[in-house]
Length: 242
Image (cartoon, rainbow, N blue to C red; front, side):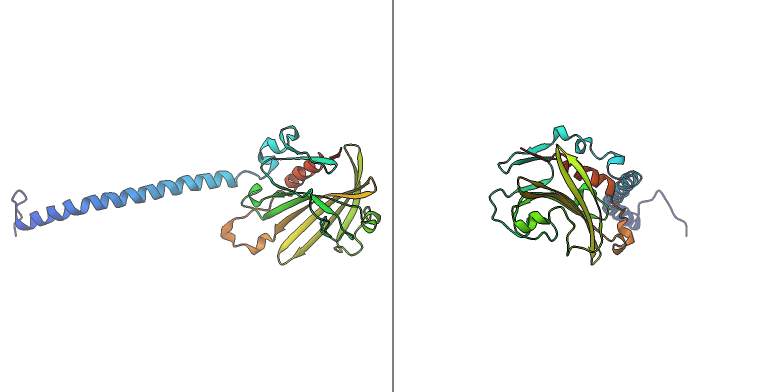
């Protein structure tokens, strides 16, 4: 059969019509796929860029978290002040009724938890960091004052050695404890002092999770514990009695 290419036939008209109808859809589909491939490439490059950098302060956590002079200062009538990064969530409880949970851990007696600060998971994203909480509490209870500068008698078994520090002219005893449960870890650092016949506690707890509990596809990294301690200790370092 000889094909006459320059002759218009019924089947050439049919092929032309099919191409006329199909080509816009094919072009639209190709455009979508090109966009998807392009976006995937951009996302992959960004992920590799972020993954290649080390976390926290060493990789350039915003210098703001080191610049205490730029922080918010909490002024109150409770007899102390403390400064903190303004993007952290805080709660003031200066009119709260006394409670046994005036500070973290087992404290004995009742007191008031004046101030609470929370560092969210987003501070160290794509890691096993869960959150951190810093509190300021005070108790005038005789039992709490008596036990203020000694380790918790019924606290976690893995209490670490204590140390001391002078913060804005006030001597503090520092206690460290670690606790764990159900794949979660809790590390508490407690700065305590007796002042005006009261026991004061400025302390923070870092909550993290077992990184092995997450699927490998999550590609989580261990959080930068040193950087987080640095920020929290800087906050504690701004505490002062009025």
